[in-house]
Every structure is written in structure tokens, then in C-alpha cells.
Length: 112
Image (cartoon, rainbow, N blue to C red; front, side, top):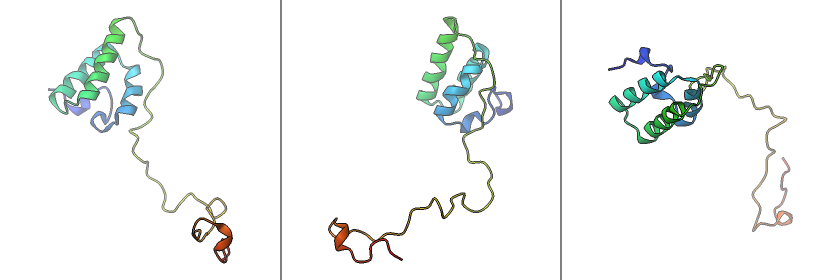
């Protein structure tokens, strides 16, 4: 049984499949095998197992692990300061709904 700390990807169980797809490109065949065993014992998610087995096959056929660090986080939102990054300059203006889809028939449209 593989502990979470022994897995080649931090927070593996929380990674969305789209992130996992990119991050496994840097892993060796042994690391992929470790993830397959962990997945079979824990989540046993078919799409994830297919992804990992496909990558294992690619490595067996001569593909090389990609260089560099594929890790850019788990995809979870980072801690951010309170408040919105949206400014009043970029926000949409106020507007009344159109009456029957014709702008000229709605009195005071887009006027405060």
C-alpha cells in the first residue's frame, strides 16, 4: 500500500484529470507504475487509470519524460486578499432590460 507522502505527485488524489495529464509527462515509468498501483487501491477511477496506462505504454515505446517541472499547483485557488480585482472602470455599466427587445422603447435606458 502506498502512502500519500510516497507518491511522486503532491496532492495526487486532489488533482483534476486535466492537470494530471500534464504533470505525468515529467514522470518516469516507475513513478507512473506507483500511481497506477495507488489508483487501483484507492480511487480506481477508470479515466485516470486509462490516462496512466496510456502514458506507461508511451514510455515503453520509447517516449522520454519531459524535462522541467510540470508542477504548477493543484489548480485550487490560491489564498488571495479580500476584495475583488475588478475595477469600476472595467465593470459593465448599469442597464435596464429591453422592452420587447427594442432599445428605443425602454425609457431612460442606460441612464442613472
